Image (cartoon, rainbow, N blue to C red):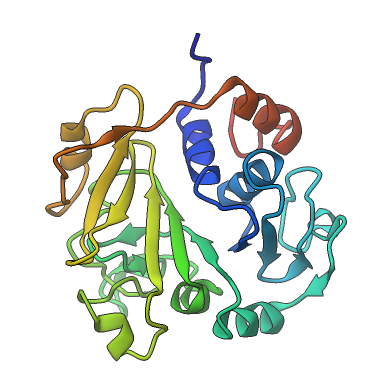
Length: 256
């Protein structure tokens, strides 16, 4: 019997499965942190977690409320700050960046700065923080976001964090590491990837109960639809038990 779960739990479980054992991932607090914690406790016990400013390689006991929370140092190697984390990424030593954003376009460029004109925006957001550096220099970027036309746009209003910029070869021309870039996008509808040749976003799997047409309807550009699309496995009993009982028992992230 498939257990009951909500969309946030689906997203966190799907994201956790994409974090490989023995790799390094830079995360903030919130859903990305929950996914990294779940991965550590299930498929990737040797996953190395880094915070922009917090602990280095901790084994997180419970969900931290901020990157400087003492729990980010639990059984970790050391304390780290922004300089250490960003220089480590710039040296090519961080496998994954785990980010969010207000807008994302077909090449995986992320906007977390403004919607509309920069000087007279409709909405102004907090901005990059460390997202530009991490998305530029970590080898693979994973993005978690709700799936809506207002977020999945033809072209971002402001490019806060580079994806594949304008297409094949553009990252390399801009001086970013060859072979780096967006990897997976986890939404409440699907898991998305990028076509190897065109670098345009594509559907990899749809979540249980979701049809491909719903993904299309909620995407503001022509997303690539392969001939074969998998179904995302639903959260397992084990994943939900760990997520609810160990990762986020207060349900600060996963909700009620």
